[in-house]
Every structure is written in structure tokens, then in C-alpha cells.
Image 1 (cartoon, rainbow, N blue to C red):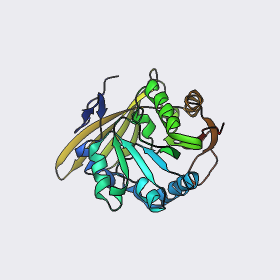
Image 2: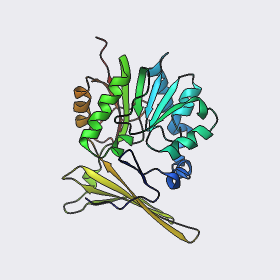
Image 3: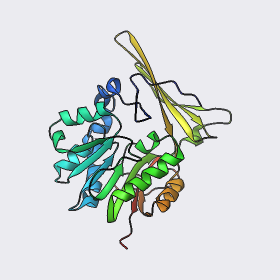
Length: 257
């Protein structure tokens, strides 16, 4: 599937960065609902509990939506992100200069030390658009974890039940100023999110490619990395994961021995 390039995207070390300056400049505002306390605090509660007295590593740290409040709980946080523009927004915020951020592909980039918890939130695992890259991400996370440490992913369950035969597009937002559609290719597990915005008489279009992934597939990736499933919930407050769940928070553990 050929995807239209995102406005402001750049290439970093051979990997396309779809979260450049144009996106970073308005990221917090465009994702405002995800910055609300009711979205942030339950995630931080879980991650702080898993970190304990240890360190936390965020893969795809972005502008610090989770990292900053987690650090505010006294947890030392480091991060990896492909986008220097997003990392710059993080560093400019109060407390951001105390978080170490390595610029690079979070499937392969290493930082020093070991961690009690590594985590990927808000569907960020899908930004790795091949199965091989997602497998390498699990291996990278496992390599950073101390024995007994946990790798946590928050990601949506693919919406394929919304696709009648012959249809490949699912709308996810239709408002006076924004139209959003997901385009699926079930043969390759690839999808692209298309965004069209109109504001102040100006129009803008961008597309971001993803690879959707099933919970069972993630469990196999974890096994390949030497991790085992510890918990899976529908939400950060521990609601059970069922066949009707639209997302899951999964926790895999690195064995002690």
C-alpha cells in the first residue's frame, strides 16, 4: 500500500519521522483529551507501581505526556524518540530538562543502565510498520530490563469487525474542522490514518502509516524476547479484557532467573 507523506515528515537514520516540527507544534493541543488527568493519572499510577524504587524507560516519549508526571512521582525516567521536535517540546516543559532522551528508532536505540519498567503507550507500537521492527522493539525493551522488570504496552484492538466485505476505510472522526479515516490493508496488517483539517480558511492534509497488531501476536513477540505475559486489562484501572474490548494494556515480565 502506498501512503501519502505527512506534512513536515523527515528521515532520521533511514527511518521516516512523521512527528516533525509541524506536528510537534500542535501535538499537545490536538491530543488534549489524552493529556487530561483522567487519562494520565491511572497510567502513571500503574507505571509508578511497576517501577517501584527503580527506573522507567519510555519508548516514544514524545512531549512527555506520561514521562513528566511519572518523574514527578519520584521515578527516574529516560526516553527514546525518533522526533527531535517532540523531544524539544518535552525539554521546554518544567522538569523536562531532568529527563534523558535519546534520539533514534526505539526498536534499536539503546540507553545506559537497566530499568524496572519499560513502556509504550497510546498505540505507539504501531508506528513500527513491519513485524520485524516490532519484534526488535520487544528485544530492545527486554535488553533494558532488570530481571523481574516489566514491559508495558497500551494499544488498540484492530477495528476489523467494522469492515463489511469489500470496504477498507473506517472513519474515526468527523467534525466541522477535522475528518479522520483509517485505511486498512488486511493482507499486510498495514493501515494509514488520514487527517484533513480546515481552520481559519486554510486546509491541511497528512497521513501516518501504522502496522496493527493482535494481542496474541504481541504475546509471541514477547516470548521471542524472553518475556512472559503477567497481566492484560482493557484499561489502566484494571477493567478485564474481553472480546468486546477496543484496547488493551498488557504487561510482560522478564524472568528472575
